[in-house]
Image (cartoon, rainbow, N blue to C red; front, top):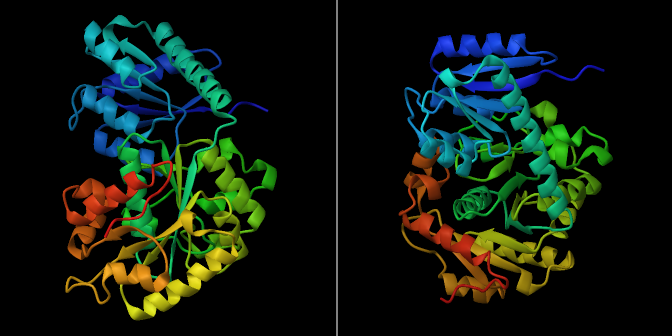
Length: 392
């Protein structure tokens, strides 16, 4: 069987440079490739959202991004893809900084022969694969923390809380993945204003033994400076029941490749959710300060306890959608449910709508907004060896 062509994203606004690169690649021996050109940073980020690539060729100076920030934005969006900088900027200081910011190779256009260009791209890909194997070997027996969020009922803001906690953790430098684990439509893509090219459903079509690191990572999407994402199903034809064994394979694999795995679980009772809960280190139950929601929360807490989740490993996140104040005071919620409160999200309807329109988590779009601050504090609390409740 012949190897698949190398899928190459060339981020370059100068079409003559793209043509020269194409000619150099075509002249290379035993090097099949599919080239995709992004003439701007905006288009490059769109393509990285829509597709996956084997290597990125990057010019630092584009119409909408100049210098090392260009590399930082691309690396932030695609940290798992080798990046070869091919630029007209030839000073040593920039080359050193580029290596420190994620570039596998730094080439200057007018100083690099065509044969050396092809060889450098190949070596960059091989070096990146070797480094990835070394990292996998180092971390093969390590497991990151798994935190699940589940609602007392539907519509309690679980996805909002989970996605912003994941974003806050990623911004603090933690390697973070958020996954929607559900059989039907996942709303995280809507909140981030994205159209995913892949989702959990692709993994569920595989034999159990093939739900491994390689195939899981192939389905992960990313947002700039944020977490990687395993979206839930997006189309009716993708909806299918999750078997506990599949959930075990997905969650175990995710937790082996990152520091924090954030699970966004549906508010229902299922063997799949039970399997996920049993793999978590901590469970956050989202609840609204309303009497009917507290009734639902009491039932959900009993369910979690039946699934062997003890009180020190679960807590409440109180999410208020009304700006007129809390129907039930926060400390009273904890007493009524006999549960610890670990976080609060105050009303932020307009801020959340603006974040959705911008395609960003709230903690990125308006970091100083009070709801962003409390969600970031929740994320920080969840990094502690022992997760303490809020002191109200």
